[in-house]
Length: 241
Image 1 (cartoon, helix red, strand yellow):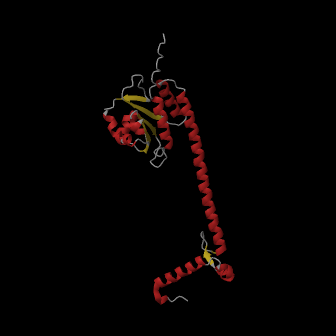
Image 2 (cartoon, rainbow, N blue to C red):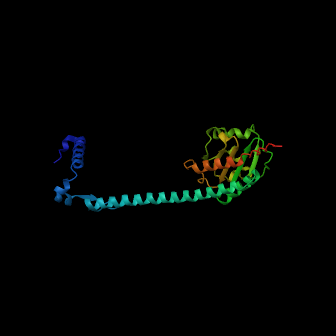
Image 3 (cartoon, one colour):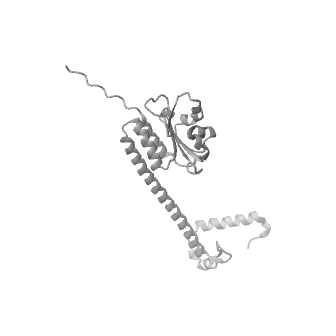
C-alpha cells in the first residue's frame, strides 16, 4: 500500500521503480498470469476499459496503420520522381536536337509549358547575345542592368530558390502578369548566374515553396546552361598543298 503521507514525489519514485522492474523483467507477466488477466486499461476511443493484451493489439494496429501510411507516401513520391525524371529525359533529348540557340530557346519554352505546366516562364540572358531575338519568353539584359541587383543573393548562392518573390522581381520578370503570380522558382544559369536565370511562376501560392526539393531544377539548370553555350567554330584543316 502506498503511503500518501510521503507526497507525490514518493509515489512517482515508486512508479518509476515498478516501471524499471518490469523493463528488466519482461517475463514477469508470464510468471503471473492472474495479475495480467486483472489489468484493465482505458479504451483509447471511449470510456470503457480493455485488457492489457487488447490494448497491445490496438497499439500494434495503430503502428501498422502508420507504417502503411508512410509506405504509401514513399510510393507516391517515388512515382512522382519517376514521372519527373521521364519528363527531364524527354526535355534533354529535345534540347540535343534543337540545333541552334534559337531552336534551344524555342524548345525550352515549349517543353516547360507542355511537360512541366510552366505557363508563366521567363528566360533572362545576361550580356551580349546578338543571335537571340527578345520575345515574351526570353529577354536579354546588360550585365549592369539595375534590375539584376535584386538577384545578387541568388547568383552568389548559385542554387535554385523556391517560394515568394519581391514585388520588384515579379514585375521585372512577369510584367503585366506579376500580380497573378503566387509563387516562383528562380533558377540561376551558369557559374553564379553568369549566363542569366530561368524564372518559373505559378498562380498557386503552394506550387513552389521553400521546403520543396530543388534537385531536378538544378539538373535542368545544368542542361539549359550547356545547351545555351555557343558552339565553337570547327577548326579548318590545314592545306597540304
